Amino acid sequence: MAGTGVVAVYGNGAITETHKSPFSVKVGLAQMLRGGVIMDVVTPEQARIAEEAGACAVMALERVPADIRAQGGVARMSDPQLIKEIKQAVTIPVMAKARIGHFVEAQILEAIGIDYVDESEVLTPADEENHINKHNFRIPFVCGCRNLGEALRRIREGAAMIRTKGEAGTGNIIEAVRHVRSVMGDIRVLRNMDDDEVFSFAKKIQSPYDLVMQTKQLGRLPVVHFAAGGVATPADAALMMQLGCDGVFVGSGVFKSGDPARRARAIVQAVTHYSDPDVLAEVSCGLGEAMVGLNLNDKKVERFAARSE
Amino acid sequence: MAVVGVLALQGSFNEHIAALKRLGVKGVEVRKPEQLQTISSLIIPGGESTTMAKLAEFHNLFPALREFVQMGKPVWGTCAGLIFLANKAVGQKEGGQELVGGLDCTVHRNYFGSQIQSFEAELLVPELASREGGPETFPGVFIRAPAVLEVGPEVEVLADYPIPSNKVLYSSSAVEIQEENAVPEKKVIVAIRQGNLLGTAFHPELTADTRWHSYFLKMARGYGEWTSNTTVAVSGVDLSSDKQTRYDLPIFR
Image (cartoon, rainbow over all chains, first blue to last red):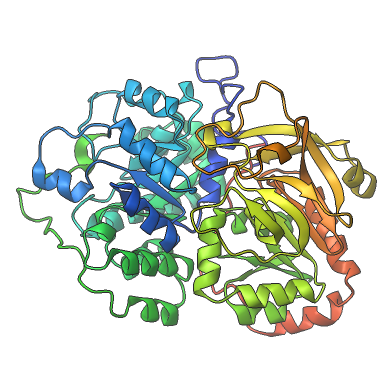
């Protein structure tokens, strides 16, 4: 299991590692984020609140997903000036979102020196067919997924970190649970599968055989795996951790609530002590109003998760 | 089986526990002050030092950690852990962060810059190679890594890293560099030891080379209370309350 990296299979072919930033270093930062919470922020002040609350990274945005939903229109990469200001305000890593397939936005984000790019379905996709070829970048990428096949396709494209998509900006955890269960369930099926059946399984989930086999041997995704989309309470965050995720993204859940600083801190503590109900009970007390949730059975609610395969 | 505590607030604690497992040693997750009393040696892993400091503060871990260090028990900090153990750190967030202290040195947090300036390098490690055998170099993985700027007289330098002169340091760094002139031009120190305290700026837990772990285990064994304390830890509650099996990430080099 050690030795062969995720992207080393084709040798001299099109998919090779750039010497300057090997895959191990890209995955390395994500490994440092394990057991942590990554929060969406729209101002330097919010970034400071997140840092003080113990977030392990912040996602710099112009609008949180809940506002993108409410306001509609095309959602694009944030103004680099805003991202720079947020980066100046904190010492923890800063992430930013680029549209799916929009590799020039990713180039701009790389140029301003942020730490991670999220190729995100929350923004309006720029390319219906293709994602960014993430091997061409020195900067690491995180990508969303709804199932194992999608996760492994993103890793093959060069994603060094995976998050389950959930349904961003809804405050409703149901989709996140569905996606995490789907990934974990597929991995459990895969683990118990005969080696001879893996070829057919790889075809079925439309993923590269070598990554499917590696996942089978490891018993988990070969990169760090966070949960995202709909986390609004400490209990939601701990649920994601108990389902087997390495950490949690919280989007609108913190800064759309009554007392952001307090809620942010509670969610951070819930992720650290995710398997200790006593601590979870303690941190869940008196947090004020949670963000308003959306019922996903409402046909008017747009499904961001279905924007890419 | 021997037991080593790993501070599991956030970061690469799983990787440390996996590395210890490869050496036949059990690593237990430590999250609360009272759990420190059942172990005789501790690893503080890499991660976001600001985050780890915040979590340690929320749970009132700093007094217990300081006591642990003052008792002379072996402690090893990697990356963020090194910052924890330093007596002085520069380049911190607004308002600073609390430190455990113990290592008589000054550490620059995030010395090498952002993620894009993270890198791998073969480090010359004569001391480690003479104790543990193997090649003269160690694969150092530096991820938003700190570096040691100054050390006191009692600190032993185990490894340093020559900085290429064209390398851009402090780029896009939001923090104020307080001691611009104190930064050495040629080499920075990346691994130190003082008594029973070990600090590395890079991440041995992300490589397949377990020599730093076995070096630390020898320090822990040298401390003496290994056997007597082991029984306490094993017969006591299993500190890792993880019921489900956790699988380890692959090692990429």
